[in-house]
Length: 302
Image (cartoon, rainbow, N blue to C red; front, side, top):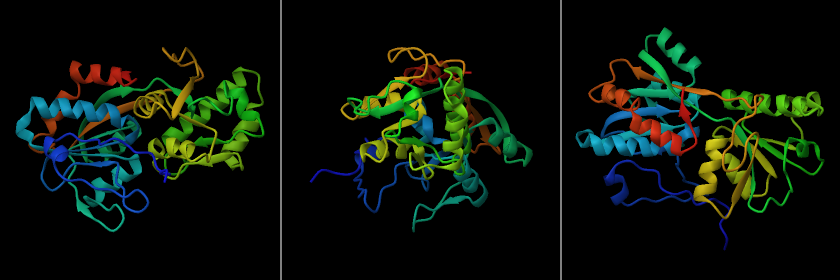
């Protein structure tokens, strides 16, 4: 029987994680965005999830350079969840609750400013920025979608992140579509109304769109999704038979965001004193090694 779920590859840092028995059952028990062992972690990092593929490789580099840290635990979920982890010092995926004491956080600037004002974050700095958004479609592009004007067709269903649970990404995606539609002389006010008020042709994610968008396309619940370029690049690399994308500026080989294509920035903060390894990781994430990793995955330094 063909699975209704994408088979995501493992995302791990510790060699112990790779060697240990692992299990999941997607229909009822599947945890993709908690990585490692929080009970044994020498350092714990919380991050917004969309750049998880670059963060994974960067942390693997850190683990090789600093083997003394032993275990590293990291979370790749929306900022509202990260804030709750910092406040409650635990995370509860379903019925399981795990204690978590975070040492670093990667998130939009507004989140770092909030944590700094409350005294939770002792210092913060710019980290990386994305290269705008693209349109993700199933391999072969069965909807024959080539640009934003196709979104006005009655037979095209659009996936976009949730306006309440993922406000930063939703606002960027929404503004990109509306601004580019306006620049093309299309009915941008109508598009804004569809996105803002809901429509039978608009599908909102629930809370973790970097997993939900490709799954919705895979399940034929939508025809196109707007996602960050680096997310689309990841999907096409790990699921080459399932997805392709249409750039919104530039080419598939070298997407260059149009002026109306909204980009966003990631900041990095040290939580309190960072614990034994937090400051070391904070400094490492500002290295040329990490900049090169993020460049490979479609992001760039600020």
